[in-house]
Image (cartoon, rainbow, N blue to C red; front, side):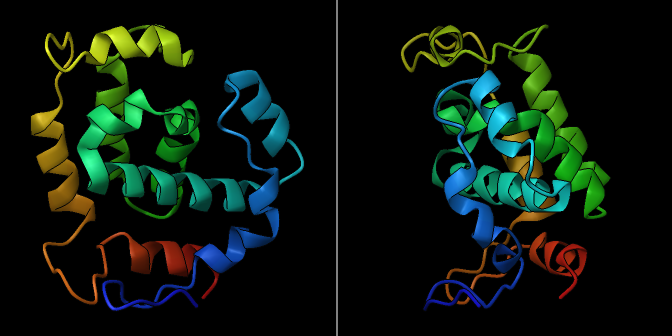
Length: 156
């Protein structure tokens, strides 16, 4: 069980930990898809929603889409739907759509859209909506709203 002063206990990460070293979102979409081919879909869902949440807490959708973790955005959308939070999945899908159609899986294609001095895409409204639906304002013993859903989905 994962614990800290700042985070309330959550069990769902235990479900994907045995696959942790196999996940590869750093080397593009093709490598990501290859890395998850033999991993149970439930573990993929839990891993991707966990990383999406980490990125959003640290810097919102801007940070998520700037970093390699957003290579996993389709699976994160599926993950939020699978755990029973389709409204959160819709927010993430809306953010993904703002990045363009088709979505630019290549990090170098995404970076110019998120230029801090002249951003072509903004997400302030969606950051707030995500926070309202899936996170918490609590500082100590944080238990984001999505965690009980993820724990239940993982079978805990």
